[in-house]
Structures are given as structure tokens and as C-alpha cells.
Length: 438
Ligand code: PLP
Image: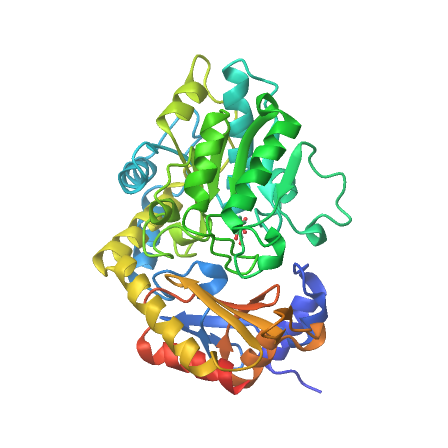
């Protein structure tokens, strides 16, 4: 039997690639070959509507020639340089200035990485090192939350609050303590109390247990993505910040998903009116055109890190000039096309479309969103809010993709959407109708 070119590719993929998480679906793994706007095309020529924006990152959409041209020109001029500890380069310098101008007030210093996992490793190490340099080396503990996702490193991976990501990888990093997540829909988590009151009391009690003088930082996604687009009450982050300040504990915002327009601001910290000490970003900084991450670091933390002999942590791709040039082109497009405002209006529009198509269905418990982060919570019973039992061999997002060509993701018992910020009203309708039909 002769294989089609697409089947040959699939066979080679199966023979040689270790894919994460889903060996089971290897038989029908879709091989993508092209992208334009919100559309992707696979090796069989089938077209898809990308309602997850790649992996929550394709802010400007796929296939922008302007970005490719910038990468091409930068590669021809200077594709790499020597180490970032001895040398620097113009795109990285310009990008650092641009990011400092967009970030909340006092976050004027940038540490570049190649992605979100590295970013969280760097942030956790920075927090410990900051206290070490200030003579408080006992501050080693990291506070995190259940249902958090902070990447695949041992620091961020340990802060991740899903046991499934720890199983078989033990021992995880010690000195990490997980708190209850802010998830107002799940009222049962808070013993009938106001969720923020409950969570703040828990935070205070945990700090008392561990001892404030042993805690370096709390890390949290402002809106939990992998956990299912969990939006905290408006007073949660301001009150957490107040408690941490009182105890000299740093706040690390993991904005790998939420930054660069996804929630209608450059950073979700601005949406919540918060000044974190460190913001970890990646993904949307280049809309996925090339790997890059950037930590925004406060003046106070940077001053301590850079004292005397400097911050002893660097790696090969810090400040990569091609990635930095691509990021600048991406930020230009976000700004020029008004994509922050568009995230708000299209997010509302898509939310309304989902509400109209799905809101009345007995298996839909809640539709929640901030900007272009949306989730549809699936329940067996709307009264008891019992999660909908799911068949791992036939997950709703797989069926939606197979039957309608619309790509959404599942997160716990939710369907999540995070489309390119350029999505049109027609595409929003297509996504909502496709989910409804399945
Ligand atoms: N932090 C959050 C909140 C994420 O959602 C992710 C990835 O989805 C990461 C960190 C890890 O980033 P990366 O996959 O770029 O290493």
C-alpha cells in the first residue's frame, strides 16, 4: 500500500518524535502545514479555525509576512552574538526599553529567557537570591496555588498545583506550599464564606505556619489558564498584595498567558491594579513566531540583584537578537492595530455568542471570560454543579475539532478559548456554533 505524503509524515512522526502528554492520539495526530490569520491548514489540506490561538499565544494571528521579513533581515545582519553577560545587541536593548514603557510603573528591568518554563525557574531563583543578597537567606519557601500551571522545570513544576504533573518525577523541589485557588464558581471550596475572605485567612494562616521569615515569594497566574480560565474576585489580588507586603514576601505574577493584550491590557497586573515584584511573560511577546520570554523586574529587586558582583545566572539564548527583533515587530502590530481594545470588544462579542448558543444547555454551568480568555464550564447538573463526567477517549474538544474543524482546548472540565486577538465576528460565530452543534 502506498502512503500519501501526509501519511508518510505521520509514520515518520510516530517513529521518531517523543510528543508530550498524548501518545494515545498519535494515530490521528494532525500535522499542520500552514497558517493565515485565524486559520490553519493540515497536511491533508483540511482547514481549521484556530480558536485557541496556538497555545494561547497567537495574538496577531498566523502568517504575517511583515514579521517573517524582520526575522529574515535580522538573521542576515546578526543572527547571534557572544554571551549576554559580556555583550549586548540593539534589538534586545530596544525591546527592554519598550517593555519597561509598557509594564506597570516600577517594573523597569528585563531578564530575557526563551519561554515560560525558563521564566518561572528564573523568577523563583531571583526571589531566593534577592533575599539571600539582603541577608535573609532563610527565605526559601515559595507559596503557590492548587490548579496552578507554571511550566516543566523543577521550580515552576513544583509550584504547579496538579498532582498529575508531579507523579513519577519525585522528589519535587522542597519548600513549596499550595493554597486554595480563587474559583468563585466552586463555592464549596470556601465553606460558605466570601471566597476572598476565606483565601486571605488561609494565606495569613499559612504564613504563620511556615514563618514569614522563611518565605521568599508567592507565585500566581493572575487568571489561571490551564486550571480552566479561573477569574479571581476583583479584591483578591489587592488583598493578597497587602498581606505579602506586610510580611516582606515578593509577588511573582506568572503572565505567560495573560500578558500582551490577551486580557485587554499589556499585562493583567494592570487589569487588577496590582504592582507585582516580578512578572514572567513569554508566548504573546512574539505571538509564537519564535521562542522568547521576558521577566519584568521591579527597580527594588533589580537594584539588589545587580549589586556588587551582579546576578550569577545566565544561559546561551538570553537576549537573542532575532527573537527580540520579532518581538518588537509583534508589539508594533498589537499597537498599530489596536489589539488591546479589540481583545475587550471581541472578547465580549465571543462571550455573548457563546452565551446565546450554549448558555441554555443543561451541561453548561458557567461561561466566564476576561478579554480573549474564555471558558465554558461543563457540568452534569447545573444545580449541584457536579462536573460533567468525561470519556478520555472521546474528549469534547477532540470531537469538536474532528467534526467541525474548530480548535478549542479542554482544561479540567472546561472548554477554553483564547483566539487570536484579530478574530472577526464571523469567526466568533463559527466557533460558538461549532461547539453548540457538538
Ligand atoms: N506559565 C503558564 C501560566 C503557562 O500557561 C505556561 C504554558 O502554557 C507556562 C508557564 C510554561 O511556558 P512554556 O510552555 O513556554 O515553557
